[in-house]
Length: 269
Image 1 (tube, rainbow, N blue to C red):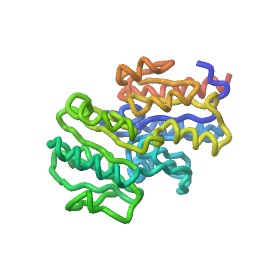
Image 2: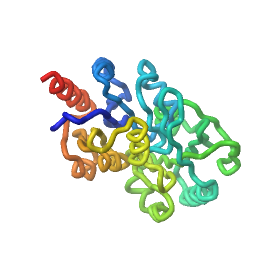
Image 3: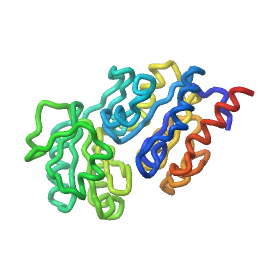
Image 4: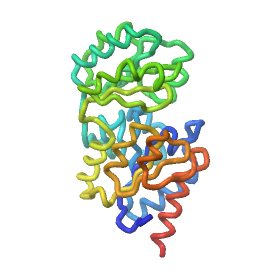
């Protein structure tokens, strides 16, 4: 890899930087300190809400850039850099249609917090891994006084096989992204990690040629499209592996950290 022009590094979280226990390695925190000392900006890009990312990256919360809700919002040093909300009318349309399908859980992701209707234990376990601030409501259709950034389906039977074919028609109006084995995310048509990355690049006066990206799932494809160096972890979805220019070890083998060590070593040469 030619690392010579890289000034911005962006990584997906779940399945990429986080291991299967949803943990960040101590090695990453050490490497990030070195990157910061060399003037390299590091951003995390996730389908998670901003508050969940802040909690997960607490030791570095003032040093990182945060692309949250699949790119619907970008935060840096507590300041909002970019936001692309959804239209309330289409949000309600999707909610009604998914309810008619049945057997799925829904998460309405607002700027202030997430909203859910169910507290079934089988749903709450994966939900709480990704959401820090939330409110249980009787009816998602009645939620007001917030800006909606994302709507998410949780399909514990397998999202790609059982839910995606039934909601793909919304792709004409929205971003419809398979973001994990049990997750499908709906965002504004212009809200994706790629556009969020462009906003971050503009903020720092950087371009595609200055950017390296890591990912594992289909909501990371736009990161790759807007980065000179794209790296898929070993456990990535087959389409993501095919799209990536380079590959590294799995998230459980610290594949991201391995590339970062190589990157820092080359800067010393």
